[in-house]
Length: 189
Image: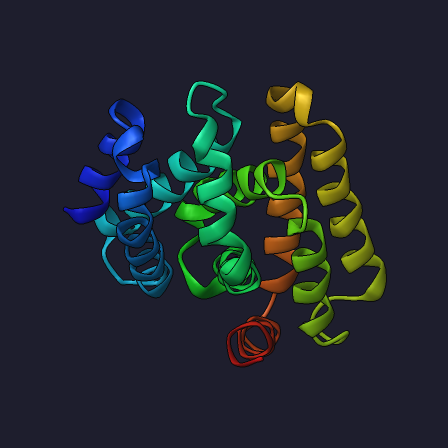
């Protein structure tokens, strides 16, 4: 599996993809992973979400000074698309069994890339108020802002954030109409 191997490289030999020669490969891997985020295959989804998590975790790695710069080169131009797809998965594009994986990826994105809060805001703004009220949007946005503010205390803030993601998921999946309108707004806008 491509993303299982890519994840192992990120864990054990990240210098390979964060070297200047690896940027193009990393960009292709990232684009391919974004395209496959809703594939109907359990193991493939786990590998893709694990790849994103490991990739975003590398931004915190001070051992590889080049990793943050390279990640920003790859992620910043595509961050809004990634954020919308993560939120689409959270709100119903994939089974609830993947909810924690998606929450952890969004959490790492918020910790690794400061503009991610604005991507969450813009993504939530796309969702119609009939599916997600302005107050519910604001609650989730505030939870996202707290993740960025508490980046130093990641473990406890991740648990709180996962609970907020579960609440968002429950609200948007409460009926087929809500789920469909949320998906349409996130994936077509």
